[in-house]
Image 1: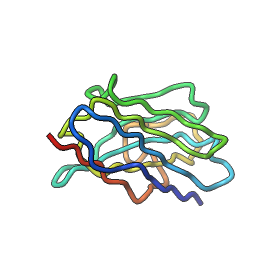
Image 2 (image 1 turned 120 degrees about the horizontal axis):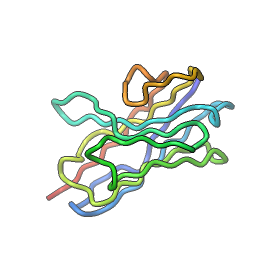
Image 3 (image 1 turned 135 degrees about the vertical axis):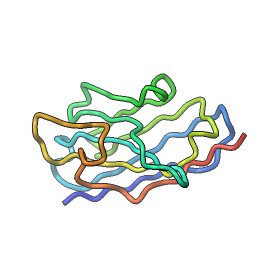
Image 4 (image 1 turned 120 degrees about the vertical axis):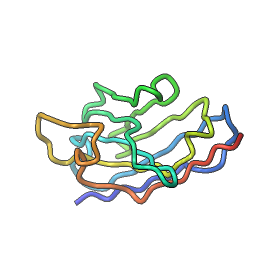
Length: 127
């Protein structure tokens, strides 16, 4: 069982930055691939970024690469999403997810690639 708690969301002006955190419970956090998704009102949940258990590989939605950066600190059982140059279209609820399957094939950009989800944190970017 894994519990994920997101924090760091809020209201920011366009061009500003936010750093989201996702703190995980569980003794095997260091072996979980982790991802971030977001969902805007009236839209489907979409992939944002992902990172492998070792931190050796990262993946991003093409439209976000260069503005967003995912990282992790296994000593703190936390994964981060640094968001820079924010735009109004980034407004959404952001969700942290963990892949606890531990197989050697992983669909990082798919919702069904993850086993556990946090409750989300709201990010609102004003123009």
